[in-house]
Image: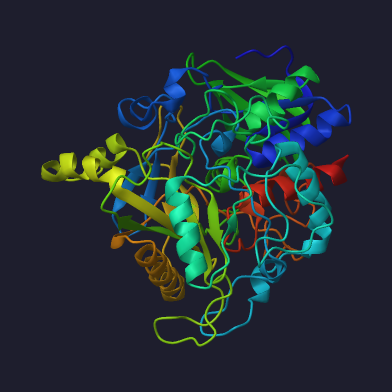
Length: 517
């Protein structure tokens, strides 16, 4: 832990999209900023493209403590996060969407083609649009304006274009979609395809999603924002955990932090404190700090998209060139079916995306003993389509603490409870059906569907709103009842549409931190 002092103007807990963008705005304005992150700086060597080192045997960036997750029949499952400086941006797939205009009106209402005003945003798309523009520039997003038929209005084009040469599997999906009368488009991505907006030009390799980028062509936050912040005088300390925010009345005075290796602890004072640990860890820290009570909404309304994948088997190796195969998006079913039925729910469904195959060793690790070899072999013959359905925030889905499960730092267990509504699962199932048609048209056999049980798209839990009685933070992301405590990350999003949330988190943080300045 390298702390030169114990008193800062701004303390930011977390270096993901919320924390990094807030820090950027404040540092640009000449403010003194301390960023605390439990993750480690990424090592840019051959381990970046080694799935065994990253995900299988003693994963390099696995967090120090688990999550305790209840998501099926009351069974408590241990889950582990990958903790890096830059949050999930270092390992994410770089897809960077804006929410659609209608998404700001709230989540779908089951059985109706309307939106739930209780999960509506406190402002409209038009108010966030300038900050989407800024976020796209800061992250070097590559895309083609107007190609996505559901894209919201924008005043400027993207900075640069994506890699237009489609990999073999992406070309198959693209051609099949067009034959079905659909409108495929290039996914907007935070990747340096042109060589102008990042460190190095992308080589379109197949190790992108779930991998680190050895050559820093993926424009993650550690590449584009955090390294630059250090040059502007911001202090970034890694491998350091925030234990508690010390509150006196309506003022947050300081943060207790601990070095995760040495277990040396220290208290740091701040004039303003911004919590940006993500939708699971931000409410957890607030609860550990004694904020909230039995009727508090802190930790409530957790949602994470109803994500899943349809896997198609082909009679040949689908990506022999080992190229990037996350290029095509299909938004034709975003707003659902023209003629709903029991199998096709009324209202919003979501997005279908071309997505990379999971690595052989990860597949083997998650396959029963007798099937490991054949499962690993077949991955070369798969093409996958990710189906991302919007899920509805529910009061009972939540993050809470369990004092009986103490970790090595003396912190209570981070507990997660989540269930989908029947409407969420029907929307995903409807997308599965459409994805199977695409795979069949491409010449493959859709062999199975697989739900994603991770929390990489976790949102909610510190809901933003205009009424302190049904939200945790106000429209400026300040915690109700507190003078100097803010939350700026996915946890404040009242609803999340059906697109990857990273760009929206970045934009809302830029907006909130600009108001602070």
